Image (cartoon, rainbow, N blue to C red):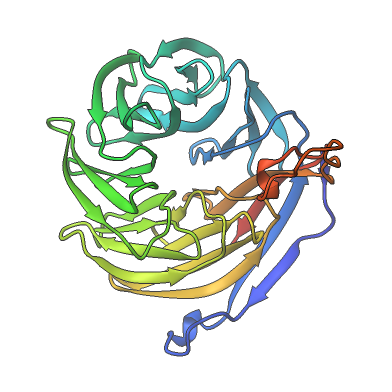
Length: 350
């Protein structure tokens, strides 16, 4: 593992003219570490209690010390893993494994694998913990319609299933009062799940959002934040109405939210930056900085104890030339990749 040079300072005054003077210039410090390891990536999750960050790597999960960028552990045998959720009440962590339709349950302290839980459904992708019901939910691109599998985080047993209304559900978030909100990337909408019955009770269109993926929530103001391509949106969780739109970069796949600082982090993998947004009031939001990260860094997590945000991406060299007589894909991202030349763990401190 190599730490790259001194802190890269990103001091930008990207505030709207009407913003309060205190928000007119915000400073963010970026550290980049190369952490090695094999495999691509999807989501990552910070553990505020230990300071560790769990990074999905396709067939395993790397565990990194968020303060130093040092690799401190690894969780093996997580085929086509996407996300990691933590249930600190039980000292358990969970991963979604799309490759074998299972959930790996592990010990948060020792990182030892406790068991593999068959999900009974395909397409496992996102994952979340709902503290109000004390349940883990996997969010699945299952066939023929999206689902959420409900798991008891103590026993590690499937206890329910939610049938969603779209084919491409993405992130989910809980209001702590009996409602879970799940983005539907294919419908530009949000499903509202009642946790008493584990059924969808409403579907709210968020048409200004193109392909909602990442999601977060301010429980105090009852506002839902949906990360979208080039324009993210804020939805009133009482009425289902979009109350604000936020411009951001392209290639968003997750959101970070720091409740005490009222800061939202929107990563753009195609543009290689993170848009940082301050919630001034329930319906007013100010972009305070655009922080350069790394092309490919499309997901993010926030440690609310240290107020540090984290992103990760492999870096690839040039793709091989197409074989003679073949037509390259119209979208180069769909074609073969070049060799992996870097594995960047990125910390952003306010």
